[in-house]
Amino acid sequence: MTLYFLPDYPSRDFLANGFNVDYERNIPTLYSFLALLFSSLLLGAIAHAKNLDSCRYKHHWTILSFIFLYLSLDEVSQWHEKLANPMRSLVNTTGFLYFNWVVPMGFLVAIFLLSYSKFLFHLPVATKKLFVAATALYIGGAIGMEMLAGYIVYTTGPERNLSYVIVTTLEEFLEMLGIVVFIHALISYIKTYLGGVSWNIYIPGKNTEVT
Image (cartoon, rainbow, N blue to C red; front, side, top):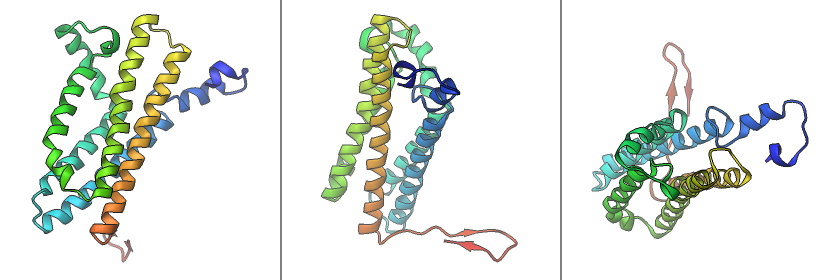
């Protein structure tokens, strides 16, 4: 927004690029990467506890951990955008599907939601509500706002206008908020139903332990 509403000042472009949520390899990207990676670690800790208890849903937690690990790596590598060219050769997408990677991703999300429905219903009510809220926020941003951004680009051209900037900013905000809600859900679940969790870090060759 600083490029649209504020006068020029030293390092304006540098700061704008460094905090532009639509750009890669900057502060928002690093934050999202760390938040998703932290979610993966929390899910891994829960999966380990569930495996010790021989819980019937232990594999669901493990798969979730790997999914969030992939999402964290995708945040810095943008693998999903590499689907654009193959999809363009298969389907001539326009309008809301202008960013055509949302087609295979939407299909995968639908499969995921169906396959995890029983897992969701077995969760405690408080955790279930937070999971649903986090999922709605994240998918609403990642796919819903991306479709709207694609429609803006399709109708107005590739030049980044104010409408596009607002939509992409809202997209990233919803994704970040969804992850924050999800992390809160995981920490609350660990604290309430698993009695907490701790990590011990040992440094080889030294009498050092960090908990």
